[in-house]
Amino acid sequence: MTTSMKFQSFYPTIFICVYITLAPTIAAYTTYTYLDMYASSCKIWAEDSNGNLIGGDKDEIYDCDHFIHPDKTFNVPNQTYWVHAKVVASLRDPKVRGPYNENTCFHIYGTVTDWGFDQTSCS
Image (cartoon, rainbow, N blue to C red; front, side, top):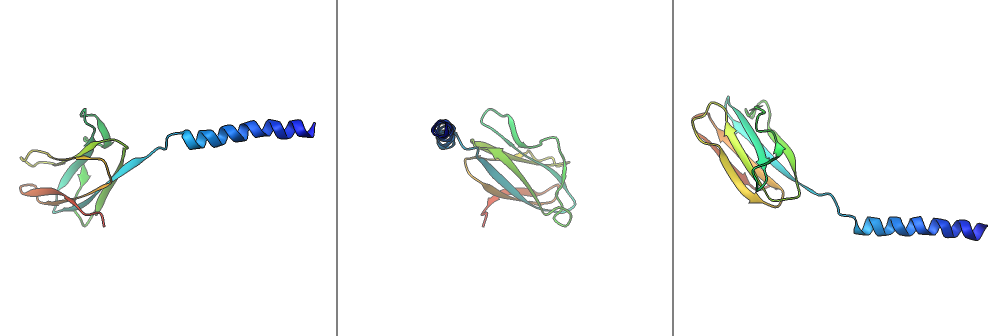
């Protein structure tokens, strides 16, 4: 009976080892944006190659004044993505950066009438 018990626990152990080895790992990229605007609100979000929202929220308005909120970080699935930025009340078009397949860092800066959105080093 003891041999039978040891043998029965052997199968689940093998199954677990094979599953851990072959199961796909869940990975995600992180996008970090340094908010460096003066008295401005902005929207920052990420979309996939089909234009589907995959990170952030394009309807959520952030206070992008660097004295109030210094940064905005969100994760995106492990796929190609583009990062969008729009300053609320600005007449300028939203800025789109990408495509990316890695962690990214950005800097949004300026005022409502004159703003920029650039990729920066993450170090």
